[in-house]
Image: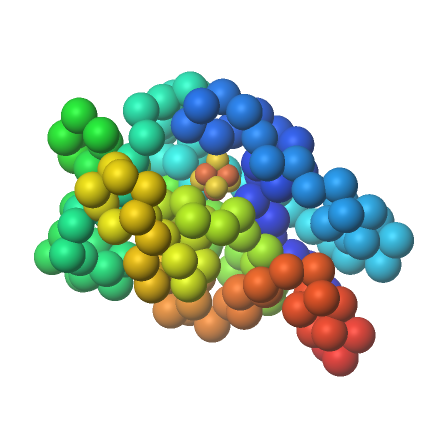
Length: 159
Ligand code: SF4
């Protein structure tokens, strides 16, 4: 099993605020179970700096809308960073396909990596149902999104 991981979950300071979301239990699980894992940050690969202004998918639009050209990803001050988000996600998708990565475990609520819950585009901390841009692109291409360690444990044991 080969698993893509959001870089910030492994302690890499790739978040918009220059920090990380290190998940010690996740790293221990990956090492203990000898799972091949590959850390990536879609926003950095799309050409954005760290730190950077926070971004959200435009209010009223989904990640799929953005992928299909109907919505945008905007920074808090209104700069359109849609191309950065799409480009970064596509670099990661290409890599996943090139070495047969089948699963991904991604940081929650991020406009790139969020899974099932993301911010609503108002920059008020309001969560809505939806995915980040990277997550949606991976899902659209058959990569299984893993929710948490328990989910990863189930999937790695049955893989
Ligand atoms: Fe972490 Fe993903 Fe945001 Fe990069 S894009 S900082 S990997 S949540």
